[in-house]
Image 1 (cartoon, rainbow, N blue to C red):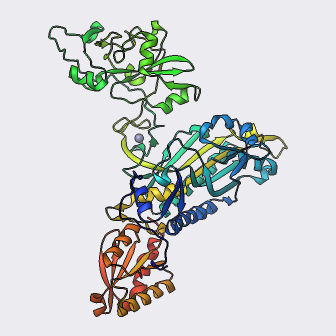
Image 2 (tube, rainbow, N blue to C red):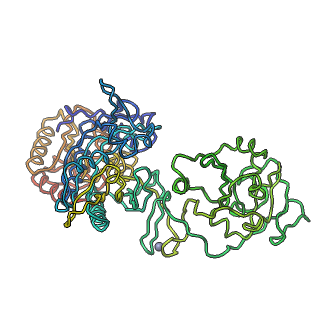
Length: 587
Ligand SMILES: [Zn+2]
């Protein structure tokens, strides 16, 4: 590849539309271009990265017993109606009609399509287990497509579906996929981790996500160094605290109004102090001494969720407790109007009498007493005793896990980190095979539903996550296994005869040695060429300049460490092979 002919439109400026590093760098390095919101063209060097990731995935899926096929993007509405997801998918599904008025969709995922195929073709237990996968475009009409390839409306995904005769078979296929995923991300040169996850809209009984660890990741993960437990905070359990923690008592703004914990609620004036932070600062206590009241409308009823002031509600846990899509956060102003109470001063004492359901988080019930709104303007209550001064209808795990919480498995303090979800595994069981009628006959001729799993990897997302994990101020620092090309050869002055000849010779030798090289033969200043080389992130750069040539040598520079060495002209290809070939294997 010659830079003079390569279609790689690099940019000096950071594009205004790109918020994240990976999005900025993919645009700047000329790897992708936006076609419309959430839809991208992959330019030649970007496409090479995608190809390499796909190839690693393909090899590992095949090794795990998968068979590659290709399912259609256009799918008939009927199969989605049969599974019950035509309605559930809502606005995220791209829907269209053909000329006969028949409804179709662009596949957001392929559980229905593959289940119908297997239903029509698989009869016997002898044909199981069956692992089928494809790598192709998916379509989801995201409300807010953003971050480039990270959250697109059209994106490339590998999806594998496993079909087994029973739960034990599914667990075996699932374990095999977990291991295959570990190998995929290791071979891509990425630090990734499997974490317990929420199955969400895909459904099923068990689920893991693969996270590429990066400070810029949008997902929060908690993990335990002691026992290896790791989970997305959306999923992470918060077991009930064992004992009442020591509690501070609020210093009252007016001396003499002292409230004791045992005496029950005492009103205190909190003029204009509405938020947890405002009240805590005013009363000189930490937010953990407060109990916050959040209102949700669940199936038309008003429900007050009670959480410790410093805890965050986890709506994924709420979603699992109630009928999906039959709940929403209630507007504070609307609640105030409905209940006739002042916004910002609402609390649980006396709320049930107003027809509100009280759902308390475990951590609230472990408090000896707390500070709540008094249901009166500019007033809070001190010394409110959960279970005494108000009785919750339900006590639940409602909050988001955070760093320092006890591990739900062993009790050791959890560590917090951030990651980018690049893969997701689901134990589906019979969620799709039953409604779609996909069955097999066992040895005795008895019919059973197939037991399924589904396993996705976002291919473009993996490329973006790799950049989030591997970049510096100058550009991308590609892991060798997924780089667009391994080496760039840069003559300082391409117009100068000796330099041009030497660069051409090195470039040819690298090609013969099976090294992917790009020759920067452009008539540009060396600074421009070096900047582009760093921006695009070739793992090695060979500089051919007058100083080196005087000693019949070139300079080899390692992008990740910045280390340089002089290499004799005769041994360049051998030296590069020595560096590149082992690095192709990943971490
Ligand atoms: Zn643990």
